[in-house]
Amino acid sequence: MLQFNEIEPNVDLVEVDGRRFYLVGTAHVSDASARLVERVIRDVRPDTVCVELCDSRYETITNPERWKETDLYSVIRSGRAYVLMAQLALAAYQRKLAEEFRIRPGEEMHRAIAAAKEVGAEIALVDREIRTTLKRAWARAGFFSLLRMAWSALLGVFAAEKISAEEIEKLKGSDELTLMLEEFSGALPGVKEALIDERDRYLAAKIRQAPGQTVVAVVGAGHVPGIRRCFDQPIDIAELETLPPPRRGLRLLGWAVPLALFLLVAAGFVFSGRETGEQMILAWVLANGVAAAAGTLLALAHPLTILAAFLAAPLTSLNPTIAAGWVCGLVEAWVRKPRVRDLERVAEDLSSVTGIWRNRVTRILLVVVLANLGSSIGTVVGVGWILSLFGKGAT
Image 1 (cartoon, rainbow, N blue to C red):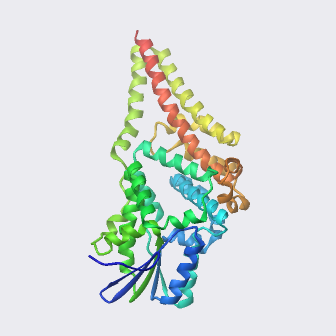
Image 2: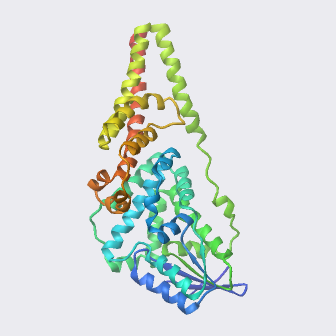
Image 3: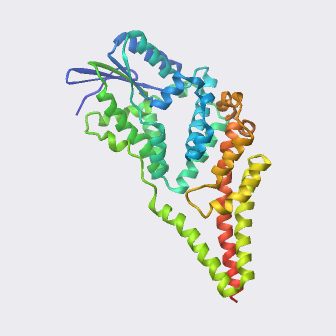
């Protein structure tokens, strides 16, 4: 087993086959971490600097104006609205902490990139693509785990609790990190596997693959224990990058519901008469349409979007390949096109409840979520309503 030597607090060194790897553990909103990263790179002058970033997050850091180029239409059509919301929520939380400590989110990554260029080192992006990580976490999580994670994210964005600079630095200590990871593992074991354990292995493998005799790797301190454990283990990177297949049970259920409803309504016409069959159809339309419209109304959507929700939900609920929220999001984006200032203020507006509704970008995403939620509730209510009508007609 490889031996990591701590040459100074939060800096480990391991030598493998004549190569030297410096592992620098950081806190993402710590000025001390940023200064440590900068100093280590200048002192070591490595051939390669590895940073805990994927292509999309590297683009966010090096091209902060990219929000102005966001194509919301393609995001909604491709079903990536939830992924975008998760990214925005994380950005808002980091921004909140960064404003409290007067440091840019990911400042240590900014300085690592700048210092690498200064010493002529190659920059290696060693983290897994964030969309892959989120999709694998989604696939491993149960429904209630996802609800708990969403609730925790909301609390993280809006909570008024303060955290001191000393507490931020303490988070880089192994004892505190071990305790945090054990708590996270117990609460959301499937999600923890994708967000932390898999990425520990991925980071370790990519750092080992980095070119050059001397490598400095800048990673969040929470990943350091895992990277150390699996640094010399065989790791299948291709498997860790594989997107999970759609859940077969959910796909079958998606088609089973409309088929069952069709048979139920047909049985209503045959056994209970035309009037009962027509009442079943009306019940389905009203339950889905009203619930989806109520969701978009709660999002303060445009009247045309609310109308689109009422008309689309009864049909999209019968087609698992199309979601009511997608239709409503596209309509809202068409009638209330996001302005440049909306794109510029996304992270800032996400830090308050009123800001989410005021910003056209986040409100469009909110329309997608609440329309889908309303349509799901409407489907449950509609099925129950139809069953009750069939029971009455049969008697």
